[in-house]
Length: 515
Image (cartoon, rainbow, N blue to C red; front, side):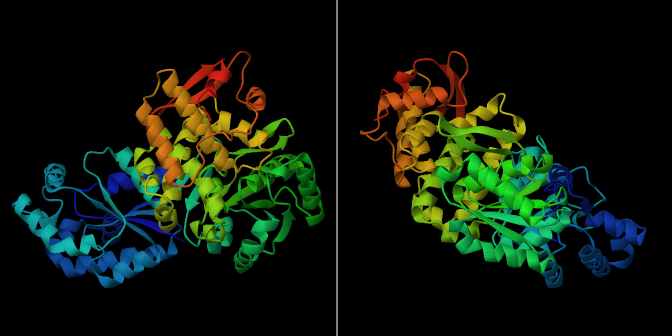
């Protein structure tokens, strides 16, 4: 059980934001002050006036500790609820505390109409609030998860809290949670039980199995499950109908039925195949994504796209079939080869270009910074994709922005016979498409330079290999799944944080500056 506690000075909007956050995450909302008033059958001002602050704090402690019997929820705390060491210890042991903070003028404006409702601020509001903030400054500053609410709407602040927590609930295509949590794999069994998911079977590949399969099995066994493990060959070359058939037969032999849950433990290839096999086995069984690569955490595991490759192109056969849960545990990236981590950063840079300029700036810090801040990287990049796919779950419009770099990139990857990694190919495609955007006047040269610099700082390639036949790349683009009758729709960068969809008929011109 992991509650989300919203804390901070009076006037920061804990209750307002808490209700919206709970709605977004499909969780219950609890306002501790309202619980105290209900339990005491009295108002907080009357309790403070008749019985004093110590009695109120005792009631506050009792209300807080009663949450140990509640399912996961969003909790709005009073402005001094965690001043007691035992209260703080309880909150931090049973959830995550997000501190909301605002500048004094903002708080004064919000509290101006609350006369009589806040006993500790009765009288000269400005003087009382200033004194309270000064007295509690060290206490508030000791909480690491901090959101400044000034200048943002409640909806914007809800989104910022979700990014900080690494917690989202998707609903545009099926209902499921996406969670980023260090050491989250250890909680996998409890997460399945909380969502009514039963009889799990783990699908993984031979590389991932060596590092993580036993940990996953152990985590599930702690929750009373007895999972079987199906292991397939590793790599894009095995993302075929033959492997899908192997999974179907494996499900049959393991005795899977409609109540079973397929767990995809691996990178994007494993997720795509396990999800597709789950979508078609007995007309559909539940599946859960546990991505083990950076690429799959920030991109492939989200959105419900499943499928496999044909010799003519990537992902030509597939289905939209969302998982019941996506659990991204950044600790799993510790066993990822550096080349694969670098490859995944191509998608992170892409997400920064699409709608998160701050994430893009962070990528310019280079690979060493990334290695030391993987949780933040995953949280921010995942949030970009979630925002886009929630607006356009079936790729009828803006979701196509996620194809930035992929039209050229998929073709380069295919022509290389997968000797180039997916992320390496996407990096090459992103630069080629940025250059084309500048060529047709959509973007400036400065954008091309910034994109190139960011990718180079991470050790990613930025041009099509000289030996790669140009005609084959163009042919592969024409087969790409994003084509229509006369043109191919490209997602082209206009500026950092903005992408436009453009129909292109002259594919040769896209590659003019690609080498």
